[in-house]
Length: 179
Ligand code: IMP
Ligand code: MG
Image (tube, rainbow, N blue to C red; front, side):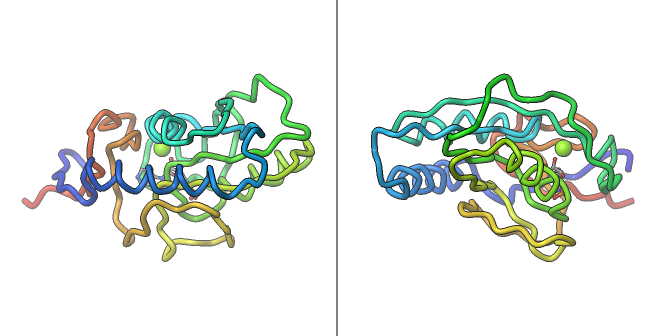
């Protein structure tokens, strides 16, 4: 694909409203309100969502980042998952929420859940901004989902195509330019 055509699928206002709602649910869902929730964002796509979600939560939070590579530079998964940056902190005994940009095949999150579960967190949940249920190869149960979307390739709000478009404020569909 040489040049892409962008059209807004979810606006920055819709994203903000939905994230505020998810933040309020996370505040309500853990019974002890003094207890810290540990947010783990998956780099790079979730960096924008992490910044907004963490500020929509009123209870104490700590943050960490994990680098996972499964897509290479294209639009389809290579099927291979690789840790490119591990956590800085120990998660044993913590309430963990994995913060992910999008659940597509579910391969990345299945791998990650297995990996992090071995480190004995007190609880582990998933918050995904986007979900493409039609593409699922592995079952994934995300406690918090921003938006379910059709099987289209999206960019913006942290999501990329070949490292481009992460800085777009809205979530946009990237389609091939008509000849
Ligand atoms: P999965 O392992 O197939 O679920 O892949 C999830 C990862 O693929 C996400 O964290 C994204 O980085 C990437 N991905 C999947 N769909 C899209 C998309 O439509 N746009 C940009 N990245 C995507
Ligand atoms: Mg990506």
